[in-house]
Length: 215
Image (cartoon, rainbow, N blue to C red):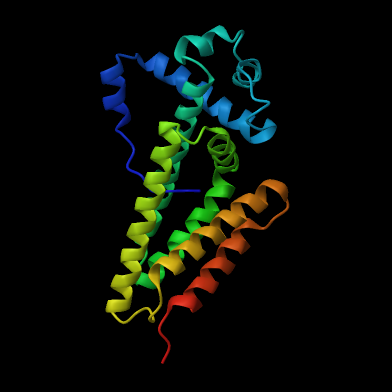
């Protein structure tokens, strides 16, 4: 479920909203607590009372002050997960050399995100699964995911043109890769002992063999 989306500049958001540093810090604290509760209890059982307890707040009033309701808070959870994912993935992918190196970095960093931020992706899955189909944030996420996959397809075609990748249907390959990564994310939710790093390496090896041009 992870995607690369350019997040808005946080300082610009603060100036536009007129929030103080303290208010922004409190909002971030609440969002972090919400992510942890959603990942552990599930979307349906997540309440302001549980989030307030997780955040160490004396009452739910502080949450209501910063967010209009549960939907508003869930939308902020989506935005935070996407921001964190971008900050983690982009430098690793851009630092890799060659098309094969960037493909491996893309897969491994997507999976490794689970070890660095273990609550984030399960929480994202829970929220997206429970949002209504016409929710603009769900639609926006789907659009961003499609745009990311389009970029990956283009990179694969460039690698094919450069002779680094063999001939194959780029859309089929990207879809398979996305599904494999999401499969590891889903499996990790139900298997706390899963060796996530090993899964990432294995997936990277599989798609390296599937895409590279051999003599």
